[in-house]
Image (cartoon, rainbow, N blue to C red; front, side, top):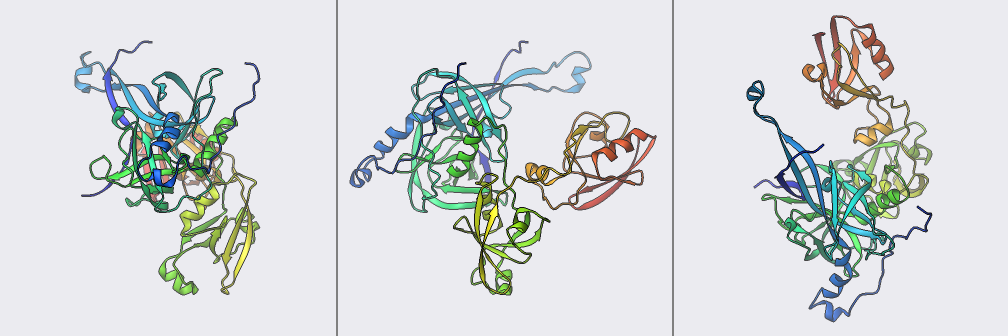
Length: 470
């Protein structure tokens, strides 16, 4: 049976009617502790001391949004079959990381939610607001108002000391039945690509049972500290098969600290080079003992990697003191830093010598300017939202920063563009024989108008030319 990647909130549909401070010191994030809650001998017979410490900081999250169920257009022509309003409800879990009510969860638990409710372990409920949502990392930070009360918290342990084989507990609210604790081990670290072939972050893999409703819950170590936020499973049935994945605490801390600092987006540092994983064939050709590392295939002029002294053909073997298994692992290590941080590297030169390098992490450049706009009027692009491609936009959308610059379609709304077959991700390369390099040039071409249009787009590396009448 083919395993599938399953995001794990519990989802429900219900019929519903539609109807239209003074400055205070902010509490700090809790810090990890290194004192075991009980003796090793006692721990062999019970996880209760760890659960007692960690469970009060794990919450249930309910996210509701109003949706409309479409009916057959035939009946709508006669005034029948009016779309019905429904409330879609998503149930997941979350972790209190600051005593004044700051909570981290998965973005897919609350995405699109119009009403978010947090239920504490003592069953009290509070409305929540979103401080920051980060779809790319599938994390969201919420805030509930608890006044002067101080809630129990979990410390975010981003020391990276977790090892394969360590005992862990998964705490969450599977199927909405109430808080549940399961145990297992760290099955693997730095899973940069899941077995379905979809590239991702560097996940912690665990065999602790994780089921729908556990999304956003805690993965804790035997000190009762948070080492990951449970995110998804691989399963042929949609329920736990012993292959679950958690977002590491290092990523969680970056997102939480950005949110509590007033940020609305997490800036992901840019390496400034195109890399590829070292395959056995590449390792043999370069004389490497193992097929590990990230080969520098191309450099952005005056980018962070170039300024650190890296060259085309170098192989990055270590980053931040950690072995670089492949290109995705290097990208992950860089992403856990903030712009301005220094990341120590070890690179293998073409002559076989290893050399240290110091990379200064930077935000990807936003050049050319984004210039996002939605095209309207009698033209093939009516309803399309377009932007200028820059390394910053490419990073935001998960695209290759080294792609040829141009005008990128990022959204298709109602209009001619939808009927013309344009899709998000298309590059507009030429209009009526005029090369298009920027949104401004596209706007000028549209303003000239005309009845016949000849448009060339690039999709998946292939150029397509079509003619339209508007």
